[in-house]
Amino acid sequence: MRAMWTAMGAALLLGSAPPLLAQSPPAETATTADRPVETPAGVTVTAPKAWTVRTAPRLVELAAPEGDLKIAVVDIGPSADARAFFDQ
Image 1 (cartoon, rainbow, N blue to C red):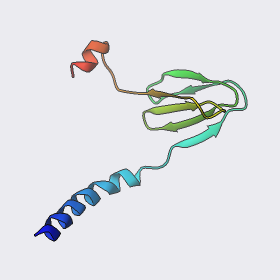
Image 2: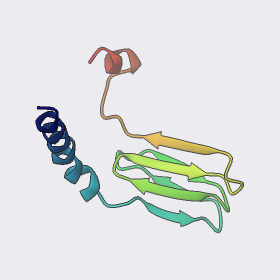
Image 3: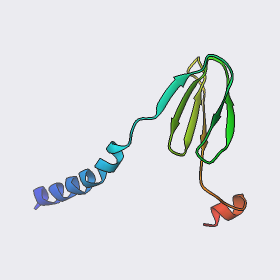
Image 4: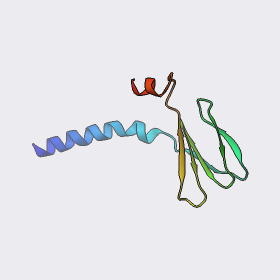
């Protein structure tokens, strides 16, 4: 009986894994000068010189050259204001 439940649990976990694994890894580049980076929604942030920029669907991540700081800009979709977003 325990083997059956273990097999069912593994099947459920593995059944949801392929979409996660199929996603392409984020693109990563190091900046040589301050440069604008745009999210898919059109928000523009300036990546400072020598920082690493990772982009993925709905995400731009800026990492300091020292490796001790990361800033993520995430597109959450359209909303009238913050209250409207959290009321969804």
